[in-house]
Image (cartoon, rainbow, N blue to C red):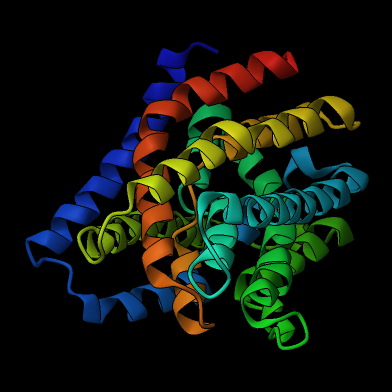
Length: 311
């Protein structure tokens, strides 16, 4: 797949993000509405999307691949997190001054509302269902290893790993493998599809608005920003590439890894940083720097990964 084809698939996502940033700048999208929009997306729209894309999906016939995808989602970000935490002191970051936040934010790539439209544009709707099985592992890693890094593993609120996105994916997989999905009325399936389709553009707009809030909020430390972009966009992708070559993965899972390897830092890590005693200025630098860098690197990174995997 050529970089031009990948660019055609990725640029609408970044332009939608830009629309959200401009909406915030011009006052069309107020901060007060963010919590309500996110609650609607997480508790209603995302579960509908998960059910619609998972139940009856022919790409999810192999249950072993589903388990492997979830394990990969967990394992790759945990490996990345401890690698980044080991590197942080070499960059002058110390515990209590951004080291843990740097490791958290740099290691967790965007696995949701930026990755979903890119995956669908490149490979079609069925692969989004496969992406959700990978997402399951990342979500669990975020609320266990990720938050544990900030708070201490004995204090991590592991119960939050059982959240609406995780429950909706598990429920959808249960419906899919039990065969109950065939009894879901077509009208209800269509309704869930329409509601779920609202989740992606709405949340991408919100991500753009959130990034606009971060820009200029703190002094821009170029060393930290550049280091995070190099790690997230150039170094850590090799863990995805090696996993795709060394493990017995199907074509669909290799396509997921190709997209995930190119993603910037997840914006939601800023929420965790603020809530669990992290270092918000460092989170801001990582999120803004990796997002800007990914605009230029993602098309080439995805194309390279697909050629590397031979798919």
